[in-house]
Amino acid sequence: MRTHRFVRSRAAQQRGISFIGLVFVAVVLGCLGVVVAQVIPTLIEWQAIDKAANKAKEGATVPEVRAIFDRAQAIDDFKSVSGRDLEIKKVGDKVVVSYSYEREIPLFGPAFLTLKYKGETH
Image 1 (spheres, rainbow, N blue to C red):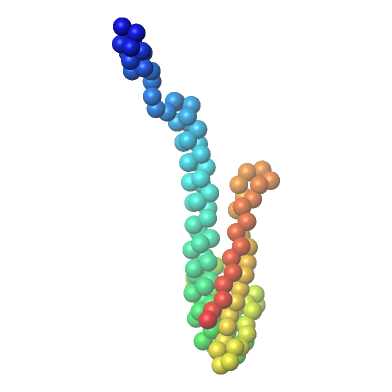
Image 2 (cartoon, helix red, strand yellow):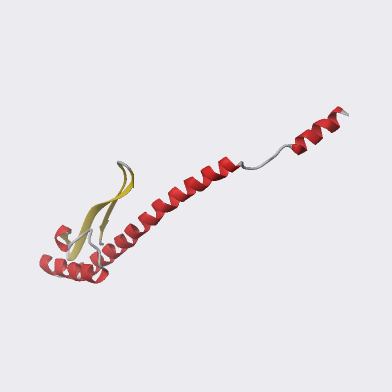
C-alpha cells in the first residue's frame, strides 16, 4: 500500500517549466534577438567594405586605390570607412589594402556593445 501511494503522489507532481521560468526565457531570448538584429547590419556593412577593398586593390597608385574605394563606398552606401582611412602598402608587385574600424551598439543606459572590424586584401 505504501508503494502505491508513493507512485500516485509522484505522478501527481507537475513537471516542466513554470510560468515564471517561461517568462524569464522569453525575456532573455527577446533581448538576445534585439542585439542580433542590431549586429546583422554591421556585418552586412563589413562585407560591403571588404568587397570595396578588394576592388580597390586593383588600382596602381595610392590615389587611384582611394578613388576606386570611394566610388564603391558611394555605390554601397557605407559610412564607417572612407578612402583616406585605408592603409595601402605595396608588397612585391601587389597592392595590399587594409582597414580597421569600430562600431558601438547602445544596449541600455551606459552599456555599449563594441564591435571591432578589420580586414586586409591579399
